[in-house]
Image (cartoon, rainbow, N blue to C red; front, side, top):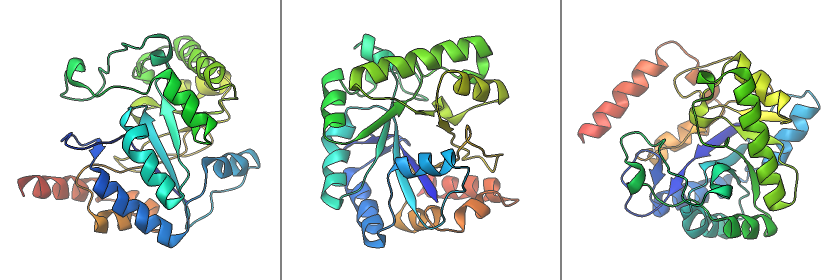
Length: 254
């Protein structure tokens, strides 16, 4: 199983975390033809049962809670009948002006807006699922275990109150975690947590479920590779990180 991690789907935002809607639609069309996309709930059920993740299937997740999810991503997902889960920075629930200060090289004042509370409620009512992306998108390994547990519990409770449903999953900000962060996630009441080990393989587990990041410039061939059954093993192979970095540099030079 491949858990895909997206961030922004928007027109004209030339940032690694943002895909053009046309590119996202091509990816969704490919996934729809394969017929292998399943809701995140199936991952939860298998993890709860102590079972492994089934090969050959994909799950779509989005991090940060950008408002362009509602404007661009959801209509495309509806068109291809693909389920997805959005991970919201819960501090935005209590502070609509929460600064998006976690995008590398982008001033917070220039960041795109986040989903409003009304949009989150409406999307959830329509059947789209949500999880927590912490309170303020801080780098959790830099916090103490008690600070992590407090942050993650508050974010889970705020989001659950907003949508009127349990929030059982967490996506770590930046994908980063350590043993004390994983313990804090469990203490905070989550059933599982998602990581983002794009820099190589790491030990998995219920509180370090690996995902694959999809970024600007990932053409359809690279997307096919990232969604293939062989990719998890390829990512863990010696030399993958160096080869991937070299490929990005070549593409950047055009």
